[in-house]
Length: 398
Image (cartoon, rainbow, N blue to C red; front, side, top):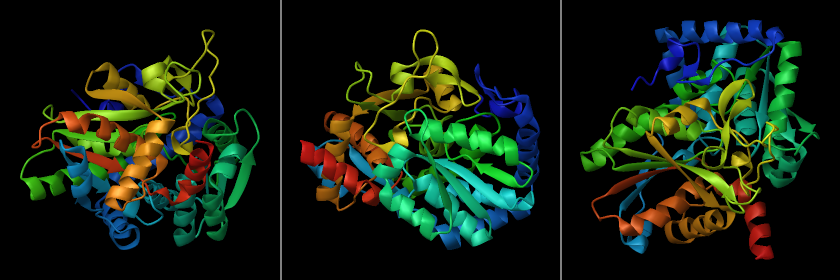
């Protein structure tokens, strides 16, 4: 299986991906692609990025043996990749630091971004602050209510938050508005896309900046166990944290890869965000991929208690990995995610993001039936500080 199909087929992963964008956006997209290709082949760029990831972000993030959770489930041995310990509290900073350094090389003066759970917005605002960019973040009005603390953090970092009132007022609509803004201002503006979604070259760029998660994980588990894991599990919305941890393992067929989508109120309802499990192929945000749509091709509203998974599409590489049967995609409901949130908090002392809680929940489902020598690695993509309000409201209703 060739995992780097982007270089040969202009951003294609099998039949997925591509550049389904307005002609007016093509010059900006080509500028980003060319700049990335030049930077990625320069030793100085990698040295600079490595410096900031170590000294500013705090990498490498630990691979932690969850002993109490393992004992409680009485099955497989569970390790947690602690992306929640990164500066700003999630994996998003890996990508924003890389894209901000790229923008600086391109002599841009302004960063824009879309955000759902707010972590990508915070990470972009953080990168803008350290490198001296102005920063505008597009965020759905509904997500601003759910993620009030992250909104405050972005303001504190000097970013301007632009509320999006259209559609469902969530991540999809924020991305729509950010792309419109970029068309009008690309001469001095760099669009920092946060997920492994959107038109080429962004799925490739985000994957390359996030694969450090999997590279570290692979090295760390060899040091701790002297062998590869049996399973690697990560939540999937757009899919950046998952593609980041999966990439170094894709060619290693002995390692089972599991992506966990948001089933919301149930995969058989119209209140979920499981684009692969419950969607079909179409075009969204410049890319051919699996997405939630009606019979006549209209984009459906997505639902998840997790703002970061509340998106009706998925990165095109995930769609390809699904069709290639290399990654198993499953789904977890809101209730299961909140239960996992509480379990990890109370029995391991780690408060996970609601996004990550979906991966924890699936781990809790399968671990008890697996042998004690089966090793599972779960990507804890972020911490749950931002989700306390949502969880408390959910538990209050229950």
